[in-house]
View 1 (tube, rainbow, N blue to C red):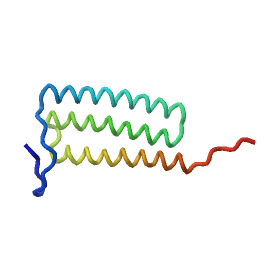
View 2: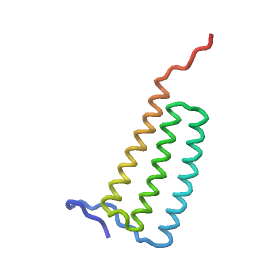
View 3: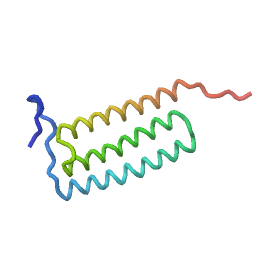
View 4: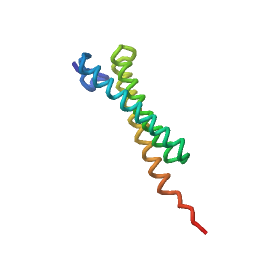
Length: 111
């Protein structure tokens, strides 16, 4: 069954079952672990590019949370869809910011 907004078909609504729940569990655990590592790297380096990448990975973990909310009925299909694509935009913007900032900062010169 496909969700429809203003006559435009969105992604097919997934069947909520054990396979879907298993994928969400793996995505949640993986993104949480990666988020922890990214935040630890930022805590060690304390630079803007590390912060941007850490925040992008946290946005990835938030995407898993949106998946859970959609699965348990906490979000409508339209809100779930919009939130996922909004987090995609946030992730891309943060990664681009990290690359742009890292490429625009000149390395310190040694005397």
